Amino acid sequence: MNRRISQLLDHALKHGMTGEEDIDYSANQVLFLLQEESFERLDVPEAQLEEFLSGLAAFAVRKGIIRDTGKQREMFRTALMNCVMPRPSEVTRTFFSLYEEDPEKATDWFYGLAQASDYICRSKTDGYIRFTQPSPYGDLQITINTVKPEKDPEDILRPQKRIRAAYPKCPLCRENTGFAGTCRQTLRIIPLQLNGRSYDLQYSPYAYFNEHCIVLNHEHVPMKTGRETVENLTAFADLFPHYMIGSNAGLPVIGGSILSHDHYQGGRHHFPIEDASVLYSCTVRGFENVQTDILHWPLSAIRLTCADREEVIALAALIMERWGSYDDEGLGILSHTGSTPHNGVTPVVRRKQGQYQIDLILRNNRTDGQYPLGIFHPHPEHHHIKKENIGLIEAMGMAVLPGRLKQELADIRDCLLGIKHIEEIPSLAKHMSWFAYLKTLQYDAQGIQTMLERETAKKFAAVLEDAGVFKTGEAGTAGFMRFMDSLNR
Image (cartoon, rainbow, N blue to C red; front, side, top):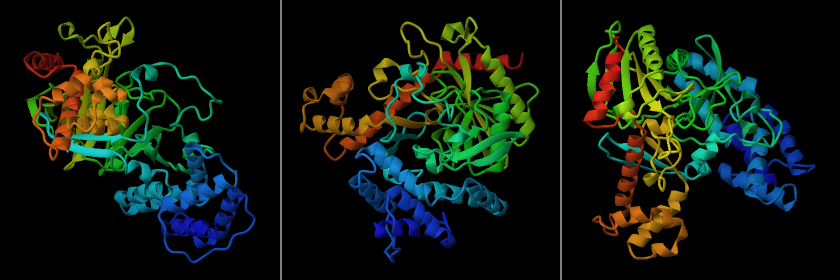
């Protein structure tokens, strides 16, 4: 026990989480959790975070302090790290002190703190499967997320029954900071002003991509996209020009899983959409200074590029407003059913060579009898790979596929090689049609993994095409141009 606590304290000192003058205090907080009354600090070799946290959690299990479950161990690990965490005010002061030197220094330090505190659990996120494969739209990034459970779109739409008092109101609220008994006990946030509006910066514990951050409204207010959204996103890009930032559309099916709290997602990552080629360029009357391009992309995307912040915001706001009420019945695009809106926009902002670059991805969440989960949603023939909603991250070309695929793709590989029999593996029943197709392809033992990755990426490209409101091809392109022409009326 003395050795593990000493390793924890040394780790906190090394990563600037605590100072030498705080060591006795921190050690006593740990002793309280371990229900011990004495401690001797030892001179110990450096240890990995996973080693000493797991060791202390095991000690707590043996003493009967916690039950031997994954959830109990995880919460105890978080409580241990909270003993050496700096106070939120200290984090804020350090962040802005570094920001005065360089914004990148500030985010580097803050991201490092999130990792050193195990808030971003590297032992879990490093287990993600990641690969890149070419597509007709450029390289697509594929991730198999082995941490978060797969969500059924119907469950996302269904009101969730609360199992405790409504504090905090949702997983994103600032009141989660330090909330005991949850993985957010080590959460720290940075207050920001975006165009005079109060927001908070934190990092995602799931780290879907590099320096994956969440920018959340200081108040618990629902998601809504419009001019104010673009103003906030461009203000964030001004503060942190090394980060991209985007927002889900504020509607069910196309708006991610948490619509009850206004928030954005960003980070230091180069998404495939950034490299998308231009299909057509056009000019919108009154906005001649804004380079306006329709992208060659499976979802319907418009790119605006301009050095003038106010002008590019005004055009983005116009497009979002017009799309909100735009219909094209021949292509199945209806903006409303009665008073229920269906059209939304997923905006993405980045700084490029002194200019603002805004991608506006047009979305529609309408359903019908054939597609009860969404007409512009992954279609049933692809659900064996991807059934969840297509949100911001995937709209930019990064697949977030369910963790079950790690084992299922390995089993499919073995079945194709004759090592296993697909009929004997119940979890592969949903893949039978795809498996029959895969068997017709050319592959050998050396190349089968690459083949499976390529075909998985094809499926992802197909679900993105399903989500596109103006389909690729002549009819879809003509429809897209009709919408762009409507902006000049």
